[in-house]
Length: 317
View 1 (tube, helix red, strand yellow):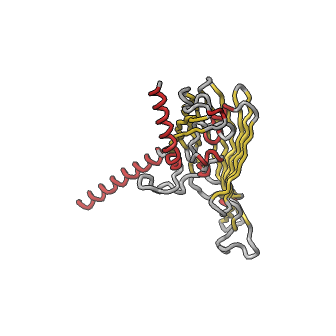
View 2: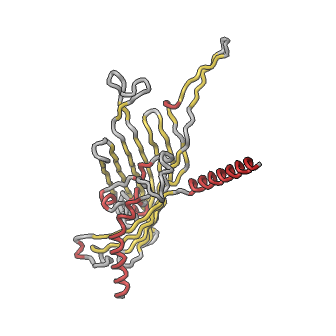
View 3: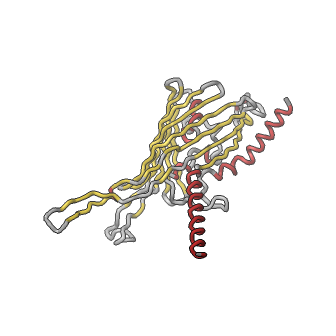
């Protein structure tokens, strides 16, 4: 028994020390590194899904997948919403990157229904007002111009349930849209997650796969034109055409977490402390789906190798 308690203490200390740095790297990867070179910038859509929500999630650098509960679970791990025992609502807003005008708003509702918990969430990101410019007027319209905003939105509906007193599962479907008034891109995606309470000194395991969906391209009036065709006679036809836009994929995320209640509950490592304070620690790691990109890169390398060999043979001949 003392050895188990010592092991749990060491695990809790390691979680406190390593949890934030590992999760801070996140699945998004803003700054390039020698191992993660900037080779996918501009190739994905809906990157706002990587921006965390909630004060606790931000303070823990996103390491909340195993211990999260309540309506915020619909963002981090849908399984955590199964802990809601009554009607719960959460809402928040955060202003990003100083005074640039970027703002993120999140709201969610959890309601016990159908033997589990049903929830709806809304996550939006707005760029704030920006001056609309054209090729003829790159500094804005002469008469003051017009304003527009870039808006990203994710509307989700999910269901979570406790299968046993230790195991919870959850999932949700999302409708994602981002763009400006006259052109936008939409996706449909799915999340699934689980939490397992080991019963050993408050140790909880969590895992989630998020934003699993397909590819989509932009649509709207800004990339649509009417072309008038004539063959020199009185016959004339107006055809509606749309510019070609490259399909983009959404960032699929994998979150694996291990958390422990160090203080505050009967199962905590250091006891309940009268139930007045709660201290927990969590270690979380995540990744993004890069298999498709790796396959494409290998194909390009093979094509280049064949091209070099063909050139060498031609020179030798």
